[in-house]
Length: 146
Picture 1 (cartoon, rainbow, N blue to C red):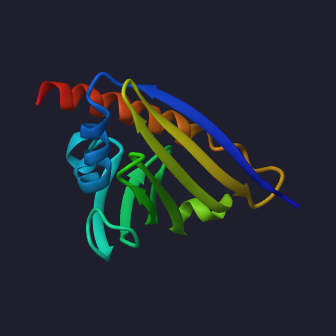
Picture 2 (tube, rainbow, N blue to C red):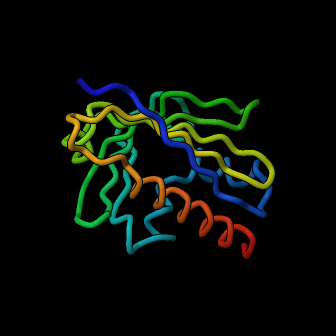
């Protein structure tokens, strides 16, 4: 039987942590415009933008076209952190649970991804970790130029 595992990654940033945090919290849908090669659509389908409990439907490409429903489970403005949990989608074919906690500090965004594999042959989600750090670094470059 699989158990919950964790992968952590850090993406260095030059932008103020508060600015990057604010973008992830309130403008996640804009990834479609910033990274059209990966994100094909992102729609708020439940709740209110920037608040706990909101649900987004995101269509993306990571090797192949996929979709996912993600719920904002936790937001802490004091700690500049948030937790996003997958509640439906293609990723659930590989992982019975999948959640990402993001913590924003000056100079760095920490990604902590907890997951439970559906079976022992399922690979660790290294491709999601790599995507997370790439989009964080690219977002940093975008925020510095705007």
